[in-house]
Length: 413
Image (cartoon, rainbow, N blue to C red; front, side):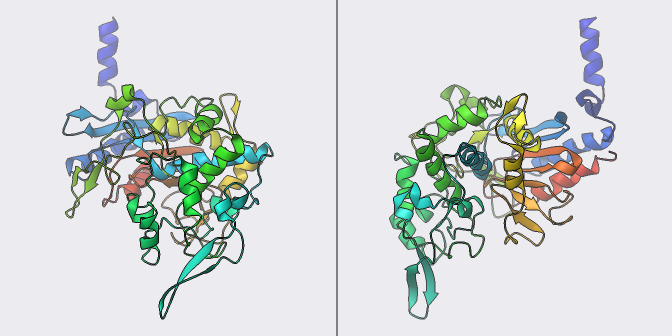
């Protein structure tokens, strides 16, 4: 009887096995598998894990392709990915936990925690070359949360030589990579404060080291290393058991290899080092990059997002208050360089106009990572949507095609 039950289960339609709710068309859900497999078969991706949740329940979960093609290791739904800038939302949450406890405020000057930020400077171009002038005001934690501090990743032509000389910018992979550093993050960020930035505080959205600076502030305000604070206050309570800054060696075989799209768009294995495989297992394990350093799974990250979608709580664990979550997911800026109708809150990009981010509703929020992963929470549809890949640089259009395929399966309420 048991064998018969297994055979029947294997022969059942895939979407039916997933228990697709009435709002989703089972055939259209199953079609997403074909979409992901197409990119694998065309050698645009080595593999991917897609996950969709609605009302806290898994609607779609699928692993396609290979975690490591050369080793013949297939992708699995519990494969572990480098999530790069998806780290930012977690670190921003850590900052706001401390704000709720009164240990800091979002209007604090950064110099309260990192003295080198007391008198920052800004580089501008002139007829004679580069001019460095004092900042018009002190940078605040709010500026960092919204990427409006004027701080880039130091790869801009106007400052790149200065950053490279200090082990940042071009000397740090694509600018954001610090996993290979033997120094602690606050030492790196203290040195950053001596370098010129590329815009005045509050003048415009500039994507860069902002959240890495916040990671140092978490350490100094809490008295704990960033990895310990995040584990004790966020990932452990949420049951995110595969989320780390540096992966335990015993989980090495679950880490997805990094690939890159070559000049023809095909996926080839990335090299070792900062611009490829990284140092997330065998690295020095000293520098916890709050802006780009975490590795995780689709399920783990979806649990974090579900906590945010639920107003700061999940499975009885309260991480943030509902009003704090509203600050994170409400546009705090006029607009960003990424398109009209998109804003930015305290750690998340926000959708302000329907159509500005594909099919996602107004009020949706999310971001992605340099290794190609992407996510969105759509509160209006009660959905959390996560796509995990590790391809850098990424040249395919999977990040746009993926949500279209997901929402094409949503045919009811």
